[in-house]
Length: 171
Image 1 (cartoon, helix red, strand yellow):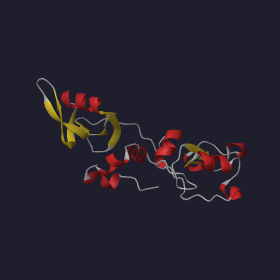
Image 2: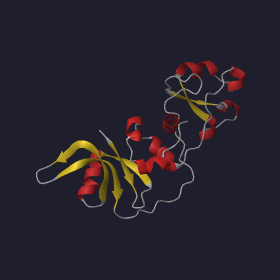
Image 3: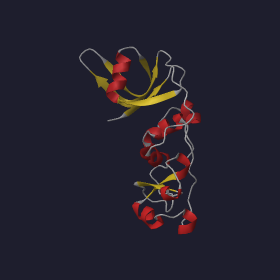
Image 4: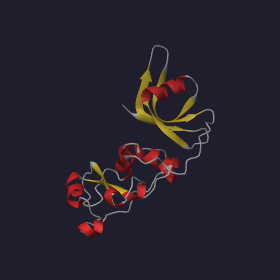
């Protein structure tokens, strides 16, 4: 199922929703289609509309300000694009740069995506002690960055050009 990017009335990214939810929002006149998948249409008995890729809410929704996206294991894997921070291969686990046993916590700056082999090899040591330098430094994504990163890679490249300035840089 395709995910649809939802923009606030001010064109700020809010979230992603399923195709079904996006169609319901458009049909209820709560949102308008800003960009559609070319050549794809949703048809019903009395309605036909393009399959939305990006929708914009008709009314502004006030969102409580969050300076940082909440940390999660899934978020770390998405932020690092499922790339191992030690070898660059496919990552399936999250590794603590400073191990929890040495006071390292669950935070954006202390966790990186890692393949199971490198996570096991590094074990309960820091990267310097294990002789395993990081290929890239962990960073704290903004809430908008985290939301845009959660889109599949193909969907991120197909976003409208006016959202290009909001796309997060590659990690």
